[in-house]
Image (cartoon, rainbow, N blue to C red):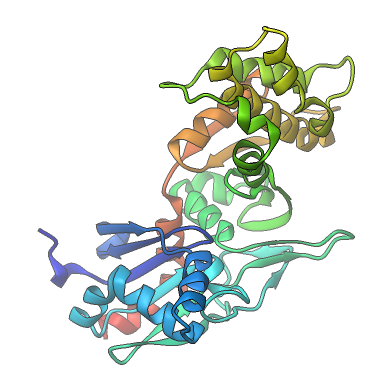
Length: 330
């Protein structure tokens, strides 16, 4: 049973498709954890279907996710990161420009009333104002959490590379605790669209386990130095290989996954073709971490570590730096 008296922070990683809540105690210990499919897309859908004002829909989602915690712990601060701070979220938190120091004490948090006399503090995302602009929300907090878990890396001025796989994968260059720049790949969303709504989906039979041979085959096609490696020109092979009897229908999904992840990796690491790729940290769920780590090994990228659940640590770090925890103890 959770000892509510030890709670010092309610922290939320609130993204596009899901929301995860953490009840955290002294030193960032996770006392309890919950996850629900209440991402901002679902909340917006609920608001439309039930003719609710969006703020009301978000309030209802918050109550469902952790309203009992906030009611029981009225003096406990609440903080969130992710798409909840976007224009489609509960309240918009302005972007910080890159380069962005993740350890700054002057971070401007957006706030919104959540009931029970409390306010939700929302962490801003990061904007990379290059020729083709890029944005992130939530990933910056995951990176901070990863750095907080490894103080040796956070104190180093050597360039590091962070990969945050997902619906929209982020590749982020970091020095010390500063995000230098980053890029986004829509690999996850594109894979989902092709798997569910394209002609390729008609050939996909479910498999009981991952077929790593098929996945590796897709990665190697993307890595190949001969012929085209553009995924838009190779994805159709997931159909033609089946039609010619050279790929089983149960292998299509993993083959396509390998093609797309391999193409993403090749596009990103080409900038280091004349030198070694920096030390790389993957922050994602177990399944995605495993796929990307395997594909990176096929590209001969060796200095790779995998981390999970770094968002909670990052949320704790921001709350501490912003003085929310001290206010709670008072």
